[in-house]
Length: 115
Length: 114
Image (cartoon, rainbow over all chains, first blue to last red; front, side, top):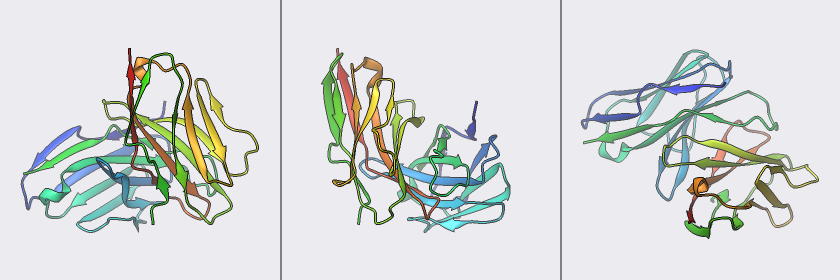
């Protein structure tokens, strides 16, 4: 069974704190993604990575950074958390195949609240 | 411009009836894939069904089918014989051939009434 594991289900942080969200997958997927989900907006891509140490900005990268030191792990970093980063964060992974039917596998999400 | 449009923020359906969730998309790539995901209140995203742009037939997976109308750029999800457990958010997504990214619509919240 494919597993994408996010380290925390719920997280509460204070404004200005540095926040790390961790994601690990066990399917040897090349691609890993971080999305945030807000009501009425669906899922918006923050960053993705198609290989170790590679990263690409998504649609809303401002205020975030990422790290991929190992193939199975993709970390999302909020350098200085702000209240507008309160959201559900979803990690996902997939194989690297262009134009294929390879679907995304998701973690169970982290609900982050920044006070 | 929004690439995936889901015009129904919320839908209600009676148990055992069929329901159609709308999805329209926008792309100039001739090769793309369309996906539907279900997100129950527990939060996990569950893959339901896939349709490739070159597939001749509409995709089906059990009670789920995809009404693919390529010329109209629509990929509506049809759920037959609705069950209470079908109550969830439903997201339509697209993956174009030249990118690795999946683009999601805003979602439709389906409520199945007993």
